[in-house]
Amino acid sequence: MTQPDWSQIQSFAAVAEHGSLSAAARAQGSSQPTLSRHIAQLEATLGTRLFDRSRGGMILTDEGTDLLAHATAMADAAARFDTTRDGHGTDIAGTVRLTASHVVANFILPPILSDLHTTYPGIEIEVVASDTTENLLRREADIALRMYRPTQPDVIARHITDLPLGAYAAPAYIERHGAPDTLQDLHHHSLVGYDRSTLIIEAFAQRGLKVGRDFFAFRSDDQVLCWHMVIAGYGIGFAPRRVGDADSRVIRVSRDEDAGTMPLWLTAHPDVRRIPRVRRVYDWLARHLA
Image 1 (cartoon, rainbow, N blue to C red):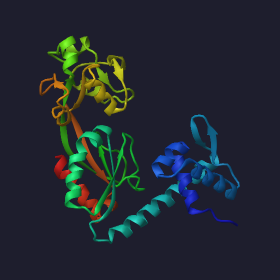
Image 2 (cartoon, rainbow, N blue to C red):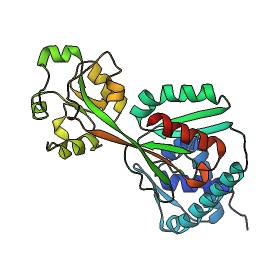
Image 3 (cartoon, one colour):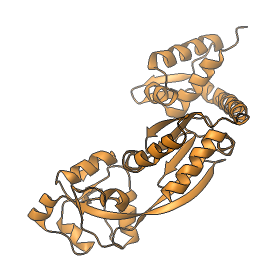
Image 4 (cartoon, rainbow, N blue to C red):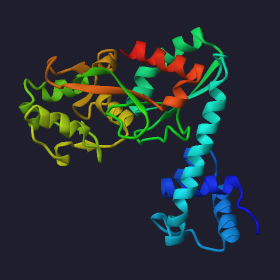
């Protein structure tokens, strides 16, 4: 009997986890045709259909669901094997893969990582700007920076700091509409906020301002786009003061206590963190982000 190829099993587990060929290809650094071929080959070897194809993505069949637990266990075991092997090295060199939100990746990390590169030129950095939860065990990322406490099991999560937030607007917007004096005054302004994410709505609720999605005149879950809309004068938006106060194109219109804070968590799998280069980057981020 022909045995399934390990690469086919990896592709099966990735597609099952991410729900589509395109999402799995991005996570694996592969291509959709390669993953599609692996799935077809695995189905032929096993003599069963693993997925139902639909417009919404790849849906596991009953047979696929039964096999997924075994494939996931194999993938996790392989990841632990690689991590243990890497952990025996002592060189502060090699690749470390980070994932962080779009705002943190674009506006906060660059100077920190530039200083890191000057100090440790042998470390190569990969950054995935994403607000989704990457699987740290399978090395889709070595280190994650998140604005919420991670719920993924078997990871080390360290609360680094609470970033003070501010409300900002472009001078042109303030000239047209004035600046709000209180949070309640925001009802009379155009607000820039997120689409599906409820981070801003929840922050308002903690300060006694109950709003819904339609509170925002512009909505997008692309945080960088939201910031550019604020700069363009569309309305008032929100950002860490570490970002907004450094941008001369906007003016902070909130008092220090108005906009609250954003928690920042640093996360890694304990096995991965024992790798010297990963530990060095982890400690560097913890020190400089705090």
